[in-house]
Image (cartoon, rainbow, N blue to C red; front, side, top):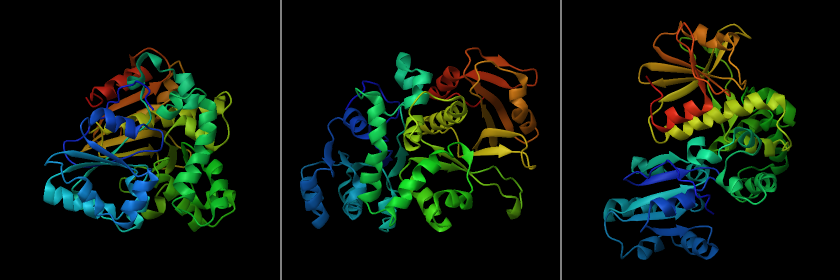
Length: 385
């Protein structure tokens, strides 16, 4: 599969893991970026069965490869024991490995140490507006997402409809990630309805009709397979009893809409959360290339129902605040959270991202950016002042 779009992520010079949900184009990227590398795909059932029984066969396959040669192993999570051989070949033969997978869960559960720091960990996300160029269309992206698998499909909607079934079959059922598969199937659309919202595990468990501990495990599976991630609240000097629940964000607008079985026209109620989630995915995707942040949070005032800022980035000792609005016209009332966060120490920049076309700046220093400007600044690594 190839969409013809050039991905911005560049391969590290050393060994690395590259994780990402199915359909992000990891294998295609590796073929294009690591020309001359030898490739092994563990979806090849014969290869998988041979290496599963005897992982040391990897060394025999690579007997003729010289030091510094790159080796690509796709779907590496299928054989965790293979990493022991990889470790030995990195140390003894000075080979470099690109280890591709859709989840680190099975590797971690098997007790694998992920090469003890000898391989970097990178992630691949759906296509960004910068990568899609003139083909990017916000309305289409909010409706169907920007997974290369979907973008390149003759029938994107049908591909998305089958995507969740593929995820359950290949990521969940095949890896025996859950004991109660029907419970997980019920959980997915309920979790999708919580996209870009604060998530209370107890409340989620009630809505799914399963135990709280089970739902906690389900959310961890979403995170391990990179389908969704929790975003913690910024809690400087708060006592434990004051801690806020995290928010849940899915990786792609199309995937979250497919999970909740809602692939018709985007409703007004959906638009805001979908746009907010898209911006978070862009921040994470571009941070794989540039060091955009050490940590990312959401921020809100202490009182319940108070003011909020969607994303607060921390890099070293500085903070950068980003509020996201799906409106195409800016109004001062949108910036209440950004005004309030100015009292927080070391906030270097306050940015409001909206769906309009003009860049503006308020009297008190809040910058108002179209999505196109945010994506441009991210692509060039110039987000911070």
